[in-house]
Length: 562
Image (cartoon, rainbow, N blue to C red; front, side, top):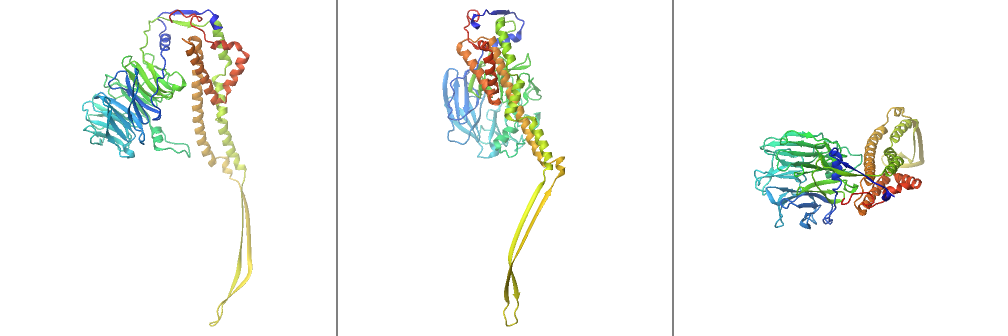
């Protein structure tokens, strides 16, 4: 048993900054507090409260709530029964007591102190006027911009009257807006423009448009096609620095420190997905956070890499982030609303103690790793179960060519019958007479057999095969990428359980449940391949069960007070 083994400790002096970082950050954990009402649908967006340091605003499809770390939820706005869903919520320093709520057809301005709301923009059910973004001119608080699905609109009297700005095409969707020190950044699906002092906007950043080719027969609505075309997702400004921006795209994060004139990509090392849906920045710790479909990440400039913060697959999909009071990172993930304590990285000179398992325990872990299926084994199992092997496409191509040997057989038979009638014309005074003769019948039949020898070189079926082959390759890549991510997350968790003792039995059980969860996810992709192999391994090597037995800290040799 692990509890009866002697343990070893090594005191590290300031030599391993990387080890210091991992040990320090391990104490921070995601928390899932009491959730807001789910009656309004899935959570959509959130932002920090403009006035309360520990407060924030969070919205689902039809409701807006105010929350904080010290109190419950307070509903601020409800659109229950309305067809317009919430798109985003904005705050601005020019209106510290207010928030701007964007729905699919309206912009509301709300007084957070009085909890009163007024309409400041209406699309009039026009498809090309749906609001997507919003910005207030810091030099003129009555001058607002509304980015819509069909161009950019401006008001000079705080929402009483709106007109097209003329800065972008009326057919261009404006998803991002943010003011620089002397200009306005305007982002569409793939292009970011900069307008200086209301001058003609200049393109400062651009990504090539994504092909909008959908599988044959696939029905897509306008919203799905619009989201699929988007490549720019988030544009944030560093607090206190008017000319420092970060841009989240589907090719990673880009940075500008000159007011948006030039953009440089941040390194992508550590990112499991380059699709950055949201960004947040903590001024106190000078930390940048990114929300991606593969989890939440924190950027470390000194290491030029990203560190994943998500703990568990339920929190993998992250779509919105914000930093509250420079100390708490809040987000909307696949697990709902979550919180994460933000702390500065420890100094490199901070000494610390690391638990070292006994040699026998390490040998058991190495044995388990050697016996468990490799990532390649998992890949092969995924390919077999999903039937996405390349051999199927090769077989289809071969069969389409062999089809020329099979003749095309045509058979046609027809028959007809009619009465014969003869006309006996009479004289001037006699009428004509019709004489009915015998019935007449006719039958015909023909058969044809043909071969198209050109199919041996190329047939029309191969075009369809090529299209299906492309879709299958994309599906296989997605499946294998997901299987790889789950496989190595499971492997890292196994190592963490052995090397980092759980502080409590509850935490230990939670980690074991996560281990089962990851195993079950791989089973779902492989028809139970992993569990079947694990059953065989543990039946033949019963001693491996000792790796997962919880032992108290005192039994594991931890120093008092840790």
